[in-house]
Length: 123
Figure (cartoon, rainbow, N blue to C red):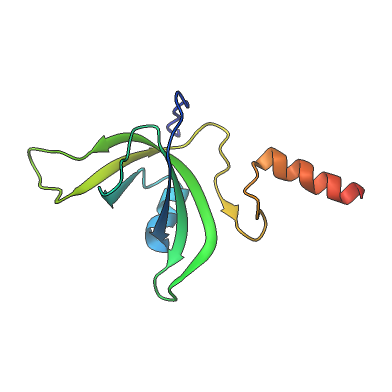
């Protein structure tokens, strides 16, 4: 079962480079957290735009997914996070799991993309 949070306020979008070995487990739901340098003003409810990056070729793959911050652990008496934060990740119900840059250059939602493709077929 996926965690679901509701959008309750305006949120900040953080675009983050994510290595493939970390991106794929987030995408399939086995990794529900992210460890990041706490150099941004992360807040619960903010959206992370995770962009898959291949460190072997130093290139973005074009794949990305969206997750929302459901929890932030930045201060812990048992471990020194050394300026890092552990972010709990959740997705909104109905959020498109993965988008390919080439197939969706305008970052439309699944329904918007489907309507656009249908209207192109009619032309």
